[in-house]
Image 1 (cartoon, rainbow, N blue to C red):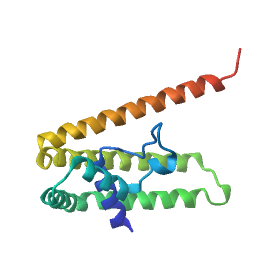
Image 2 (cartoon, one colour; image 1 turned 180 degrees about the vertical axis):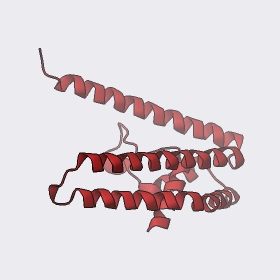
Image 3 (cartoon, rainbow, N blue to C red; image 1 turned 90 degrees about the vertical axis):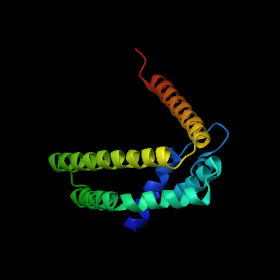
Length: 162
């Protein structure tokens, strides 16, 4: 299970899309493809060759030893959080400690994920594929900007009137 999560996480990095995208033309179910769906989508969009897919798989394997322990630690940390809050328990100091540990692990995982993306981008993709990847990145940024704007508007509409 942890190995599958690691592979899914690293494969998700190829997507250059950090999380599910919901566009104006698709509903939430269409937007969330899952890790395998995103990977397949990007492989099609970037038109990866079999040789490139093999290279990417090798990059994932080479980085698995670094990422897997982080994912295992995150799972253990999540379990500790669940145990710390059983039956509605709330120990703010303990929860803060676990949250800080989880943030540190997430930080390390994000750095590793970006290193893998960099490797794929610089060692595997052709110049045309890099251009396409940047187009996909620009679309992602646009969707994020749109979400931020919607959240800002929702926040303004829900604030109490003076």
